[in-house]
Image (cartoon, rainbow, N blue to C red; front, side, top):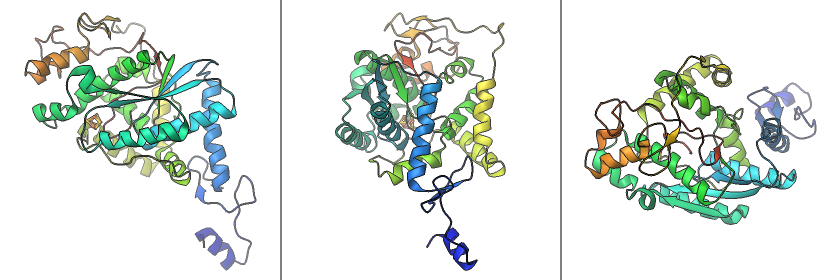
Length: 349
Ligand code: SF4
């Protein structure tokens, strides 16, 4: 017997009903409104919220090819499932694909990719997998062997961002979408502020499909729908810096439940002074990928690895290929319009 129902019975009243349909028993409290709602109404609210974000922001046009960054994790699996459902239900007219990156992490990515392969069949979406080994000649296992567990996520994040763009170009898609929950976004807002990373700051707010859906909502949806996802953390996690932001946000949320949404809103309202000099977009002399420097960040990191000097492209040490200042790169003008991209820590793309 549900807690609420037991209370009502004790009080002699009828069992409590869903605040939306007023017919079925509630199974959860909606964090945003604190309404008690039933499973069916929860699905409806959840899917409708994503549909509204898509419609209001005009994220897609009919006939577009769209790649969904799929890691096999909860967020990207929910995104793939919901987007394919909405595409059918509302006739968006999109050609959807799954795009996965194999970082070469034994005991983690190999297992999660098995989940994505099952999702390919379950949702009927064609899957493209690109590996670091094929693109860069290195797996994350090799990189960690060389550099240890410090800065490994920097290599992985830079390589993944470029790999996703390359995968999107290969699939000839118009847009690339990645799934994130509100908690991830708030962490990223905070990290970008702490790092003073203005370039990323601008691009993170393009459009975020799951912006207002918190971790709990996504987790509950995946659980109730019995979606097939992989939930183990990367063996090379945690990214200590992101872990700090996560803990801090969780503390804030305990004091003020809306803290996560408020941080995201602050990020949206943030304006960069017109006098601020932003990095200029060019192309990498080495690989042709977008870059604000002579060489893109991935090429600098790769050069360091190949020369046995992995620290070459990290931090602000002078003397690197690009003059050593390692100014932030911009994602502007990427081959496809990426709706989000970030280094994952232990998260999805
Ligand atoms: Fe890569 Fe994420 Fe693992 Fe870091 S935690 S090594 S970014 S998969």
